[in-house]
Image 1 (cartoon, rainbow, N blue to C red):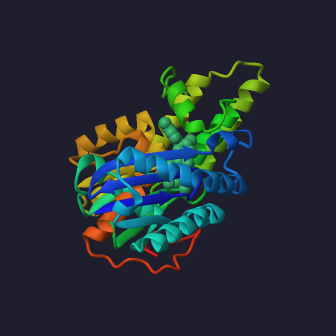
Image 2: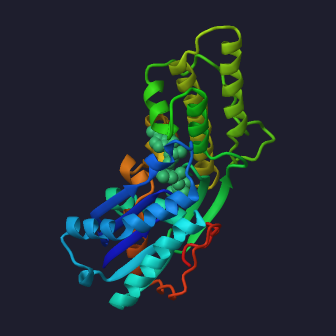
Image 3: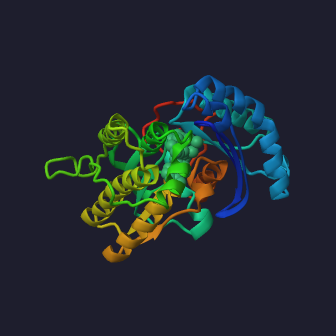
Length: 341
Ligand code: ATP
Ligand code: MG
Ligand code: FE
């Protein structure tokens, strides 16, 4: 089926077009620059930007794919979780297109879409697989027997998301927003063992699959303040590398443990932090050592995009899932166990 996917859960207006598991177009308009001076995404600004970007981005995707709206067999849209006002713009657009074209529409879960997107790059999703989703809003370990109907949360962050920690530490280091890409770059010039930052929730009595990054963020801020108090320069590259090492160490350790303890042989990474070069390298190393196959989409498919929503929509069609009704909600706190609205 030819499926158009619409993603507006955060600050990216993503429109993707796929045919089955083949990616035809992935157009993204981001409002990230408009949020930069606030140091984080401003919901009202994001909603307004989605409204302005929606139709031009749809047209750009159609042009790239070389198809017209009339060719589209189904529409898929992120129903949640995400920013309520931002989701609403995508959901309204999807309903409008579905009604105007008289085509089925699928309201899908954003996290399941992050998992499903890998199909566009590496072929059929191996199921069951374990998914480590790490972004600015989420850090979750999910067991995925069926990406269209059965996604089980094993653990998640109890405070900050991994990407949020990258963003906050970048602010402490004066590196700007978003922090992930710039810390990734800076860290390459630094020593990951220079400073021993804490690994949250890795004690013997801690929850095996939950994460905590707020203590790490505070530890980095304290360390940097200490240097300033002593009148010493801050070795930015070493701090970046040591912080990144602490995050990546915990993420990979818990993900592999989840695979082993649940008898799952495939690990999949997704979300903006999965673009991190050190995470990709350490996951590859540790998975190889543990005999686990690793799938990581290319960075452009890890961050929020429309192709992932189209990919999941196409899979819903493939597996004969019933389309959603036209009253698809914009559900800001849609549980991950609900794959379809
Ligand atoms: P949501 O959480 O709803 O998916 P989001 O906009 O936070 O929304 P993404 O666009 O997937 O999610 O990811 C953005 C996050 O990923 C930011 O926190 C950013 O700092 C982080 N990020 C991006 N690239 C890298 C990188 N190379 N290394 C580490 N973090 C990164
Ligand atoms: Mg984003
Ligand atoms: Fe996301």
